[in-house]
Length: 440
Picture (cartoon, rainbow, N blue to C red):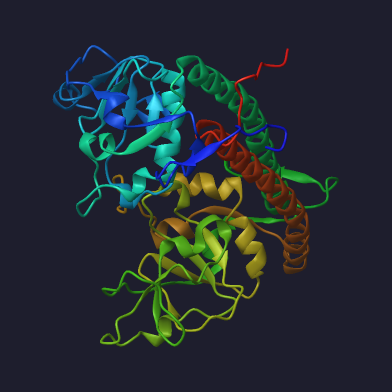
């Protein structure tokens, strides 16, 4: 922000989310800047919603005619606000300037800009209002807003429409450049993740030696495998699959000296997170035999997200008093199986494809995978010595990718912060862009 100058003089706006504003700006309640649009239906339009501060089309496969018939209309250059359940989601962007004609859930608010305010400036003013203040408003268990809650809030803005337009154009132009960099960074992260996954899948199914003779496994998940490896099912690799219990627990995690029951999220993405647990009430006797120990191999059997079912993690830290739930399996491998090799094997594409095929149940937490399905998965079994070499190699190679992903993610976060700071500074008058012109 150093390359942008400030306005000559400022006043205390008295508006917490704007603080000091240029002295020539004026303050009004938002009801003088934004009119609530009367609810009207238009089922001929496609369904839409807000996603990351943008109006998007919504999948209508499971949308009934009656439900869509109750949806309200939002048109191009109108503003959409999601006022529902603020306390359940404090991160999502809840305001958007629509660039399409759609119908949305009747719970949304639709507002239009008055003659006092430029629509692009209003877009970014609402953005800042959203991220800095809106989530402190509302009432009820689900913290839901009304138009009145929003319209009675004050905001300061330039009196001159030309100044508003320049600020809006400046933010549009500069954030578009940052968004392009963000898109490149996200693409890089996805590419690194794909390469990491490829390293895992190739090593556990094809081995480390590219010159070794191969054979056709006659199993579509596996393809060709080293000729000297054993083709089998996981039944040959697994000694026992143990399942815990899920007593009625408290919502908060256990603290030091308390028992906690692990949630399925404790193994998401192959990482063991013992802090992902629910505290066991002192009135309930813990099942000591389900306590997780360092070195245990854990697997989620159920999740609301099918992509997380079958996630496997090694308990790599010694954190006592954590118990298996009935949605977490503890897998004991045979003596001829290296635990780390099994861990990487279960993360391979071949295993993920079989897990997806075996998931049963409707949407939500009913999605699960059974013990009998797991032991019937097709697999390969190298010698114990080869398993150890494969596991060690994967650990080293994937760590390199994790470091690159971590570095790229930090850059992505910096870009997000830069974007947010720029929007805030421009739309609240912390920088003066009245003489700004886009670089050609």
